[in-house]
Amino acid sequence: MSDRPKIILHIGAGKTGSSAIQSFLELNVEALRREGILVPANDLEMSGRSYGNHVRLFREWNDEPDAGRKALESAVAKLMAQAGDASAILISAENLAAYAAGPGLFEGLAKSHEIEVILYIRRQDEFILSAWQQWNAKVQDDFLAWLLMVTGTLGNWHVYLTNWEKVVPRKNIRVRIFDRTQLKGGDVIADFYDQLGLSVPFDSFAYPEKDANPSFPESIMEMVKGNRRIFRDAHDNRFQEFVHDVTNDRYVKDSKESLLTAAQRRAIVARYAAGNRRVQKVYFGNSKEGLFRPIRDDAYFLPDPKTMLRQQLGFLVAIVFGIYRWRRERRRKPKRQS
Image (cartoon, rainbow, N blue to C red; front, side, top):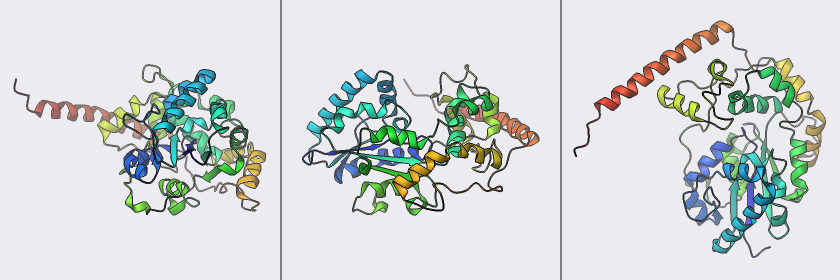
């Protein structure tokens, strides 16, 4: 195995800074290549532009795991043959953490290649709420019904890790907590860079200019949740792109805004208590502080109906004006001479 590049898998999880990490990878494909880390294109080919993101490919392979495993092994074999002096091939797909079939895709490769896994985790109440807005609110219209259905399984880090430990040695799995107080430099990109073990300074690499994949206020998502005329599926981001374009990123969620009370959040985390203790013991050692920071009563606020209505009306006005401004700017552009 030592003669071949190792495989570094950033498996997520989703909503733990994965988009920011992938933006960093995209900006620094050539710089990382000079340091021996190959970030392949989205189809795991050497040719083509790399966006540092291989999510869609693994979504397809997860649906057909037998065919996916063969396709993955073929793609990796080609990369290995063309990797030159690279010391590592880096694959980033945040959906691999939760996919039960994800580890199995690498079962054959793990027998002949060194594989390292990097997983970021966060407190389950925060993870579940972020997953609701990013994906599930697009196809569900009842938050509480969905919450009751997923609590205890979604974000069960112990189960996710146990699945991966069947394929990758535990010593090759690194777990990081997505919390500014526990990240290198208080920044997930700097923390991920540190996990790569490179000797060149972090500030010699390009850094993304803005927050990747920000969330909307609850008042905005309340108007469109579960609307199939807007969202084709849970992965359809056209509405978010539209809003960001016409409002110049004015509508970004306050990190303290919450659909749940502090007591409700504690009840959610309690469902994961046993698994969290196991993760803490295996990957962080014994600590009286616990795996995640305690939930404070004053850490969040619930938006009141009047505030939400005011935000919704302001949002609709901003959308109409944004479209008007866009149309006006288009009319002002000089037409090409034939």
